[in-house]
Length: 343
Length: 293
Image 1: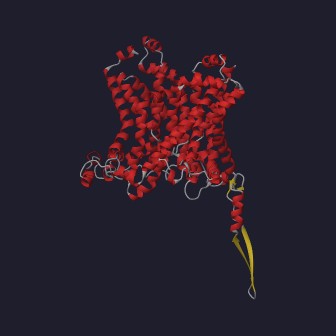
Image 2: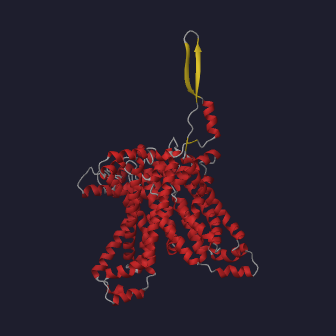
Image 3: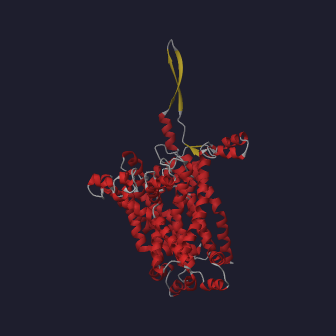
């Protein structure tokens, strides 16, 4: 295809992505180093005879508004927001570092800083849910593959539901069930014989509930991919293994698993990206007292009466950096694969 | 595989069926339960006294004389005017899917037919864009949208959702078009067609399976989005998902949780129908991405 034809075909989608993805990223970068203007103050000297002169400072409303209208982005403040207490909290971290005697204490204190707390939850969620999704998906795929033909379609249908459901709705459906008055909540109270047990009350239990939601939501995705992979498993390989006397576990370990390995890395990649942005379950579970993620942070800054664009932008930039670090190995592999193919 | 299935012992078969039943229960039971409970009163669905109340509907009978009531639906759809949000959602989804497929098809086709190195750069850029959590972009939108006075209306949200949809659409359609032999449109060009005419006459008639599959995923993205719609739509223009989130804030205090339950069931219903009719396409779409990836 000629360059000019390519441009004609590609320009609409390129324009959309440029204007609404690339440009906003630049806009976020710019906003993260700006803060709203301070009010313009003026000093007025009022002199009354006999009493003398007094100086008063007041806000010059006119000038403030003019300044805000002329330059809506605000004033340049450099990396101040990144280093403040709500984000990287550099000075607080230094203080804690010098004030702590061992690593345990250090991490405990760091955990009280909002950004690091959100980071801790986001990373814990990402790196627990992702492997669990792969494992559960693989087990279910192996299992469904062994079912009777007629049942398979039904199982696939019901399995797709948690995956296609709106994340917020899925989270709510589970949340209402684990409510202390809901069916699962009551069941858990009964099992542990503790009528006051509530998943909403403790941070640890809330984290577990969120992780359970994460696995419930994404395991069907892994299952469908692995299940499709199993259909392409060459039968002669399996038969050869059986003739050689391999047990069932050995067949899975040495024949099935290597065949599915490329799919495992695909699922893991998608899951890393999606779990890192965990957000809706925190809203649905009303869990922000116990668990905050980076995305929830941004959402919280942007919503409400006071829209804190600078703070939200700074968190966004840090999140984007995090995503890029997660993606680097994959990007390098894609690049290498393509280079090998083209040469 | 017949060899393997014949050798399966009885105990193993039992374990397999128990495990499958357990999985079905985990995947489907929450929906069944919520659907059933949405026709009860709050004190049945959230039962302090006895969990079987949610099945039999003790309180619902006491209040309405029958074990089922549509009070939640009436409250949500009529009193809270949820139908407005339903209409908004379908407007947004319709335009997102149409626009996204139109420009995505052109772009994906171009990527699949051009062998230059910049196609790879564009695809990798799309992959990076796909990885961006949409909410990180929202803080970039809001200030300009306020300035230009386009915040809060449906068209803005539609365009933003189309753009966010593009990376995925491009990857999907790119790999789909690569499976359509190049010789098809090459021969049309030899016969004197321009590239666009070749696309129109030769490719468009054979591209529908891939386009429909991609369209399903575009629809799901637009329908399921919460981050963008909740931040970019004003109160009057809300779609279903942000409206449900708004219900949560108000109904927990007013004791109208059943409105939210009814709204949740109403919003989930179209997705069930979608899976019922397009199960095959959804599965093939998911796996197409995996094979390429």
